[in-house]
Length: 461
Image 1 (tube, rainbow, N blue to C red):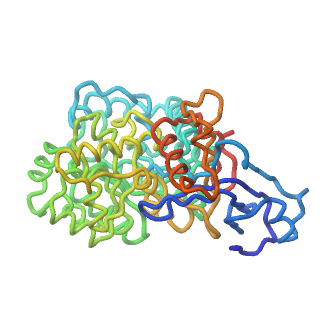
Image 2 (image 1 turned 45 degrees about the vertical axis):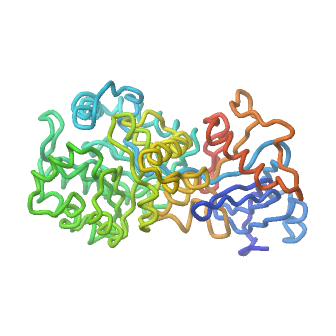
Image 3 (image 1 turned 120 degrees about the vertical axis):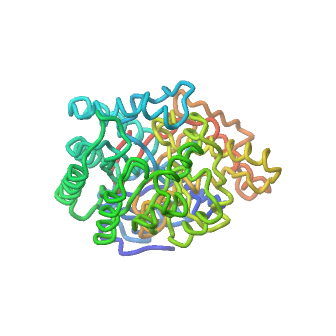
């Protein structure tokens, strides 16, 4: 029995719960019950009980409760996914990357699209769609890059709040080495960044759902003066920051020429006070041992983006190496370098990329398991966005950010046969549950995320 006060429980969720509270661990609770308050907090969590038993034990009034009981069929509750790296304005370009690599992909496809979203009607269309699409795929929290336009960035914040998705919202900063049609001055960047900070503070003062994140696009697009200003702002207000690092070898060579006084790519951010335990570094494919040590020392996290790393031929991130060195790792779709808005798809690609890496290194240790990547997509991502105590797994004190996974839903690509269904008190029980979760990971899609909740609010049905 695990509970807080039950005075304000308004909803009960009963059935199978599956989560990955620690790396590599699949915790299956077949007959669980969660009691959730009006503000979306889990106030009680029973690992072996029923709705009737909980109502009786805690003297609850059934008429006052919204009850979701999924004890029948191939269904289970799973934590909401956390996307730690996604470019909201790039969503229309999903699947459009040709034969490009990073730097020419930016100039050919990405910058023109982002620049066009100063048109707020277009931005409204794109941002509504990307939020709805990611929520539909079970992403309850996303770390968004917007554009350099403050008004469009504020629109993204408003829509995330309206549609009920947790989000870090970042106005992109780029005042150097950018096309003349998509660049800002230092003063424009400062003004726009402050405008976004003020707006988010106004619409969500306690950051219940949305929070700002400082977003220097990557070192080449920012002058040292701009990064020093962002670093000071970060330190003064304790803000999160997000950026890119060591995605592409040509990029790394270019960065070295632009910042010769810094010892490495990671040192550039550290030299500007942009490397700490509230920093999300996307990609981190080609890190040196020195950079690895520096990132670990500073407590920064890495967003692993396997789909985009493959799509624009950037490389294979050594995720196990990062984890072995105690560097926090989450998953990022990296829309639209990544062609899918689904963290489930990203997780399966993370498994496959790790196997390609293992073939190259000859080390089985480099492989990531199903349990590993589901941890990265939930609890691992929660750590990167600073919400590990609120989301990413189930338990008293956490928030009800969850998905109802239904493998029997109409159109499901996951077929579970009678002999594959776990039977309690049998030797194959645990393995059959692992097999079912693996079938979902490799064959499932948004149709299986039949309902999605954020902080207790139903945002997909």
